[in-house]
Image 1 (cartoon, one colour):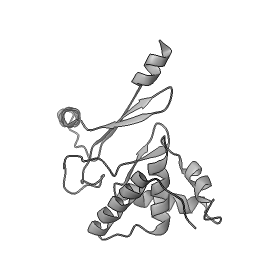
Image 2 (image 1 turned 30 degrees about the horizontal axis):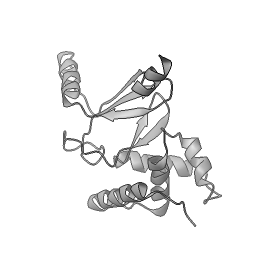
Image 3 (image 1 turned 90 degrees about the vertical axis):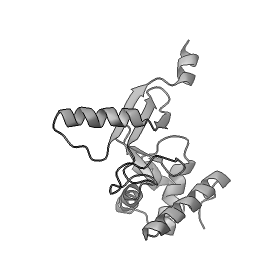
Length: 166
């Protein structure tokens, strides 16, 4: 017995399986379930929230189970970890430009992640702005620093919360 996922989630999970197969790794049933829970969630999801949901079908699931699974999903670029929220968001559907060919990230290696986080409703929007990534790399170079993978998290107020507050 597993989770019932919406058609969009099932489509994204199928896409994730294709990505994994292309990398020579397996999207096991457990990994698929956790990824599906993240994809189907309306908001960024924390590890313990995922563990609680997972226990609905895997009663013996423990913290190491979820953390190993999340590590796999992160390493294969299928999710992002938002440090600010200590939570995870999916990254399967995006068509990000290819950047550095040997670093992990989303479907395309080297994906520089940029997130806008609403401080009121916690809504998260991922943006792909190559100019922002280039500006950061240039500034780092001027400081004598070579960037690896970058994740930018900017906090503010989304349009819906701004409109509701006026």
